View 1 (cartoon, rainbow, N blue to C red):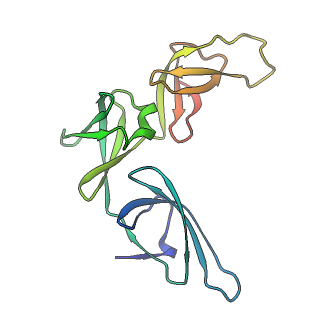
View 2: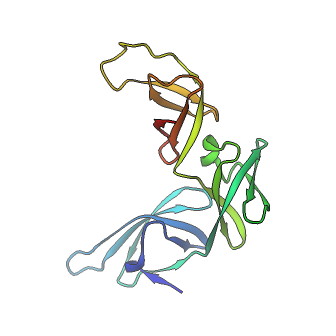
View 3: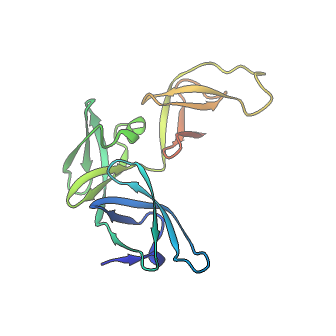
Length: 187
């Protein structure tokens, strides 16, 4: 089964050169008396790397990648391997650091994630949009440091460093966006 450009949408898994990708963004332009050009940005489901490709012609066709997502819970990591448990059948899966390096700053015990399967093998994980993390280190914020919108550096329980407002202190829990690594609010 193949799909044309008109059926593309963001988040659609596509197979390119035998590897699974997801469509991040796409644009089609047509100039007078020329074939249309489709510019598509893909993100690899295995490595997380972004790939920009252009396709010329009227009949651009893609093969959908057959991926499966299953909800799982993060159990623990031993430095080189990370262990997840499928919540439906209690089966455990082991992923290496190289596969989920992008997710390491957000992994805390019992975090719910989606395991991504491609041709029966786990190839990656999908994080929730936000994660609640504990502030482990933070310099004190002093009243009168600035007129408005001041921030300071804070180290979270996973080792991630982010900018937080001055009123956040050690022991506070903050909500962090996993896509941008930015502070959203205090929990």
